[in-house]
Image 1 (tube, rainbow, N blue to C red):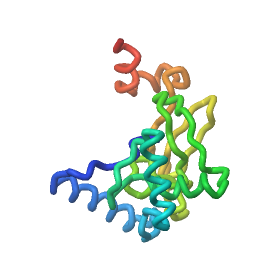
Image 2: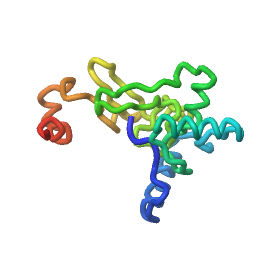
Image 3: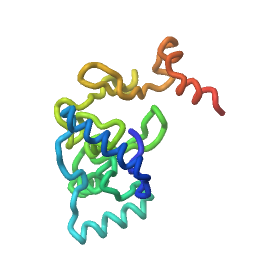
Length: 167
């Protein structure tokens, strides 16, 4: 639920910010230390690259990518039932499942294979909407659609109001 990669031509300041965010994630015990990109055989890598191009997959190959797209592709090849994307009702965009999100992702959750038990958790459902909360109950990301918010919640969300009022 979010972007799929970080641009390879980032500034030193952006790189430092990404590093600092990842360091904080590790220090708070939310992520396992791991290389976050699945390694493929040369033959599989070739097939993966063809799949990315043929399907216009929004993926940037970077050591700080926020999604392990190779892992997702490998999961599809191996019949992993989690290797399916869907339209997110919050932003009406196609999203890939949390299982392959890396700690660089803004909505990194306990559903990622790279997460520890202390990582933020999604609460809610498709009818009421989803909220990502840390272990203390603080909201990390609110992905309820305008129709799923009460008037009071809606008034506290100027971003949603802007989207509703902008043609």
